[in-house]
Image (cartoon, rainbow over all chains, first blue to last red; front, side):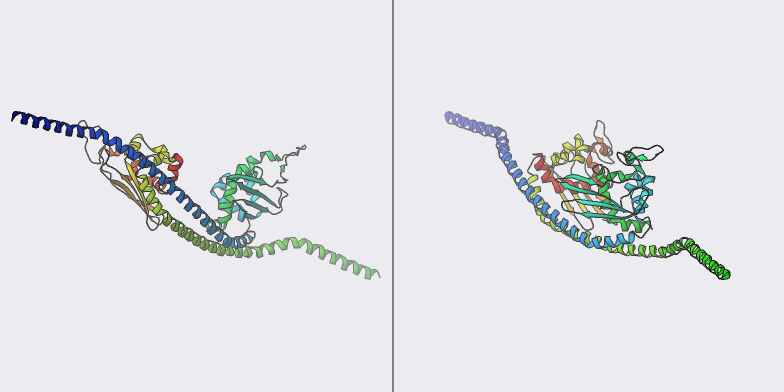
Amino acid sequence: IEVLLRFFFYLFTSLLFFVVASSLLQPWHQPQKKSKVSASDVQSHINDLERINEQLLEIDQDLAAEIKAVQEKYNAKKRPLFEKRDKAASNIPNFWADIFESHPSFGEILSEFDLEVLQYMTDLKVTEGDNDAFKVEMFFKENPHFENASIFVNVTETDGAYDCQGSTIKWKSLRNEGEEAKKGDKRKSVEDLEEISFLSMFKDPMESLELLLLIKEDIYTEASGIFVRMM
Amino acid sequence: IEVLLRFFFYLFTSLLFFVVASSLLQPWHQPQKKSKVSASDVQSHINDLERINEQLLEIDQDLAAEIKAVQEKYNAKKRPLFEKRDKAASNIPNFWADIFESHPSFGEILSEFDLEVLQYMTDLKVTEGDNDAFKVEMFFKENPHFENASIFVNVTETDGAYDCQGSTIKWKSLRNEGEEAKKGDKRKSVEDLEEISFLSMFKDPMESLELLLLIKEDIYTEASGIFVRMM
């Protein structure tokens, strides 16, 4: 019977050893196996995410197109009203001078010279072309400062890069480019324009894209509102 | 005949005088008359302008309503995709930590403490209510820093003024408000939160409205795009 007991004891201890060993080994095995599974799991979730992102991008493109269409529809509604507004504005003395002066950005940069020049401004036209292209044109009555009846900038956009072409202003009150100072001629040269006038934006329109966009977005579209609030 | 000649001479000179006098007077009279007419003229143009401005405002209101409707239509399309994305994201380790860290604004303000806390973030929910109200909720797994399974801010808007209500975080790693420091307790107090964590936005959500709007506009809507570009 002692042999039988000894046999059971061995059986029992070896079983116990097996159980303890396997339970000890498990925590080392399991995470390795688990992290293997989750690595490919993570990759499949990343793939899902990429697919979802493409679907979201498509939706965003449709959204942008639809919003653009809505804006164009309303721009078409506003255009005849802007034309009526501009006709009324051209009969209100200093209308555009007041609008520019009251704009927070322009109000800060306009010089005495600008305010004097803007007294002669009669009209503003902003026309939009394809691909975010636009033209800003300011009209002036006969004035002692320049010959032009209107000065304009054409802005075009190709692949996110803007290009600008401005009119050449034919100055009376400034020495034009290349014009030599005669004796007693105290006029400033057009090279000093940057210091004295925001109209330098027509000389270096690329430098002044921000101002041109402000004229397009704030001044032109908001002029009647600005005027009414000023009264 | 001399009398006749003298008579014609007087006639002629008085006529000449009359012509010269009237032509001299005209420039003095004319502008006065003209400026009288133009004063009431200007007023009628100003009235026109006010009417046109009201019409433009109405069009702008319709435009805003239509754009909002378009955006809501597309938000509804995006919502199920966001939910799929969030399910995938919750299975990608550090997804939200990486997104927050790579955002230009959050990347700058996140502290070491924040990056450690964000490791436990599993999900982000942004839900929009009426009148620009929204709720931002961040979900966390069991972590050594706080008890909450989620922390959230409710933002409501009335007449352009925002109001925020944030969850109270029950800290483990910080001394909570009113909790006294026991001997040997080296935890920072929740009052120091502002210095160490962007999670202070849940304590003073009004101060952090800008961050909350960034989470709503940039992080939540752009997460999959940010993640894909990071890879």
